[in-house]
Amino acid sequence: MGAGEGGGEMAAAAISLDGVRDKNVMQLKKLNTALFPVRYNDKYYADALASGDFTRLAYFSDICVGSIACRLEKKEGGAICVYIMTLGVLAPYRGLGVGTKLLNHVLDLSHKQNIWEIYLHVQTNNDDAIAFYKKFGFEITDTIRNYYMNISPPDCYVLGKVIAQPHAKK
Image (tube, rainbow, N blue to C red):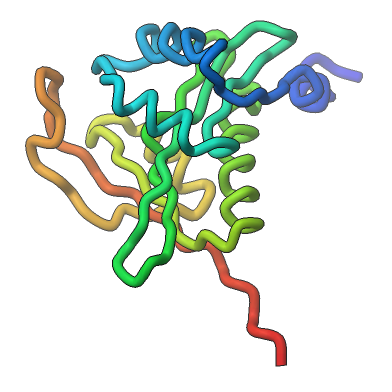
């Protein structure tokens, strides 16, 4: 086996996900400080905890290296949608499938719970994140000017995805 062959399977086997609870929410706070140029308030963490299985920490060989934090939102008409507040992986662990595992977890969970819409905001200059989400079928649906404060550029894209609904049984 040549260099680089089979590494993806080994890397995937080393990745595990765990829920976020009161006792480990500090892990999420530390990751967010390392990963993002903005500080998150108490409401963010309350929403993350309230989302239950939709918020996850990712471990690579038992080291906490990434997270996804979501908020469940009720739309007009009562349908629930998922808002991905944050998804991040520490730089040395990118490209190993950690972000993919986190996002697939939320996509699968959404499908199982009959939630058909997922959306998020991405800073307009974050080409890596935009490309990552597009691989999963997300599309840019809107641009919001001056969404972010104290970071440049202040604008964001709204990326959205509608999960295919199962056909109604006859």
